[in-house]
Image (cartoon, rainbow, N blue to C red; front, side):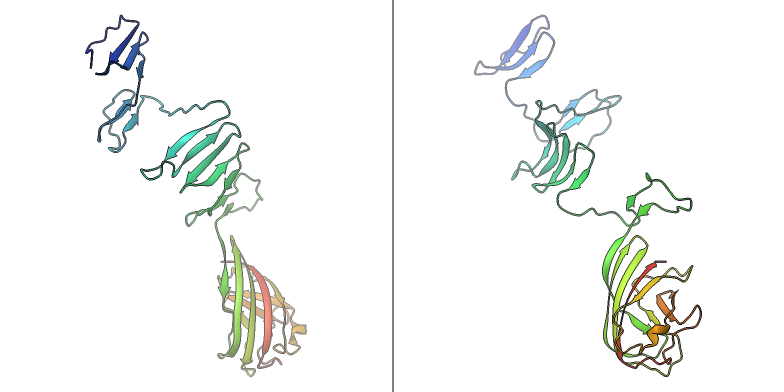
Length: 283
């Protein structure tokens, strides 16, 4: 350096490099202006604020500390954007957080793309990708009004898939087709299914029970919504006596009345098609 000591009495003092160009200026307010970049050697850092001796992450070259609150304040020009840009030596902007002062929207970027935005009305918009919550968590509706018997306001599950419906409570039938689909929203499950049978033991006097449902049924009240679709040949007209359906732990029991079951030997055929839909509360 051209000088090694700077007097505070000077209104403006410049430190020059070997090319006689001003490199650093310290004004009368003790503000320091650099004519070029401040370059740090590997492993060195800049500390903004008092040094309390508390440990920082060793890979943090810029460290901010205060005895009370500490913030990073980014101010852009009116109507322009400010934010944090993150990248590497191959790409200077791989992700980051940007605030648009024109639209008043906060946008999150990752992998060179917009991922989510909070707009000026507070709406959270996912641009690409899914909202994934941990097991046991979900969407909390506790801000809404409640009924007197409310026990939970957490929507914690959505699922859809397939299952295999079966005739239960009877010797193993011969099946041509067993197919089912389900949708589960919270604890409510809706299923549709088709059973095509080519060999059913019609000598068995047991109650007709369809099981294999994808989730166990809450049988506290032994009730569910149940509807028949195509019933070609299988029930052989006995469907006209179907008056009720009782929920069992893994499916549905077909009933003539409140407690009289529709039995395998009650006139149904050994082969045919039965289609159904049911909605129930999972256990």
